[in-house]
Length: 402
Image (cartoon, rainbow, N blue to C red; front, side, top):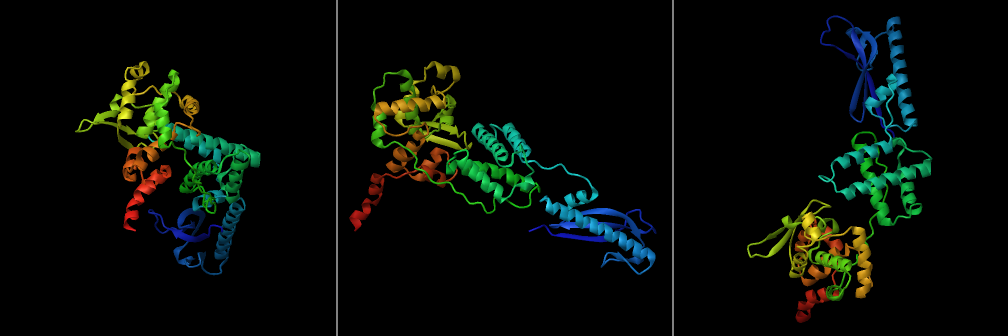
């Protein structure tokens, strides 16, 4: 469906106007937005019909003026239909420029995406986490690769982006790049932000995502059961690097901290309440949401164990955290040593805290959500998996009643 054009000729009186003929202007209206331009013609006020936008009478002068106005009208419509054929975004201003022969620079997708990422980089870490920027950089890389794959070009005009583009991009990510459903949806979500930016600026009239339907599929999150957590705590390890990683992993099992948060905490993040119980206060790296967690004895003992560690002293940190890659690599060794048949990653600790340590020990989900630093309960529910023993505990009163 094309943008509808309304136009009319009208007389314009200037502030310095005295008894001179009135200038004839052309008004272009599209989607309620107006643009005006001078026709270079003029006429006496009493010789003009406002209703028809033409000169009165059948004199040679009136006929000649009306013919000239009709030619202007024809040129305007010609410019309008040319923009439709080229699938350009039509506004009153862009049509005016096209009619006058003022060429606009095309809005190119990759350039807009790059500009977005540069601005985001300026706001890291104040407004955005470094990881968020990296995901948008990867999304841009996939976008460039897709344009080359489908169109054999390095960039493209944003007016060419339609539903077919989005569908083919989805297929490219799944088939050519081998992305899972959830990864594909996340990359397209990042791309959709760029499209919304174009729409907000008036560069795109229609949302190419309007008919696109794809949803995140809920996956089974790995967490440790009580007996597996105990096995990890009680296992005698002889290699220092494994002991260190095991301790930091356990600390996160008892506090719910993510890797990005545990690697930055220092003595300044510790405080005690009125009963002299230790707490940990941290702003989550991912969301900047404050999170206060009471330190269980097992977690506090780990902090005490490493308070004299050379790394902690030099960096003013509570724990000597290694790189995420090394932590995950060593966790696989630790799992083998403990007989745990699960694919452990550092984030498994956060899931374990939400499920085994808190919810399945009857801590209300509202409290768990607050400790995890979530902005709403629905985010916590993705982590939470109730074990059968918790269900049996909750339903126990019904056995007595019925």
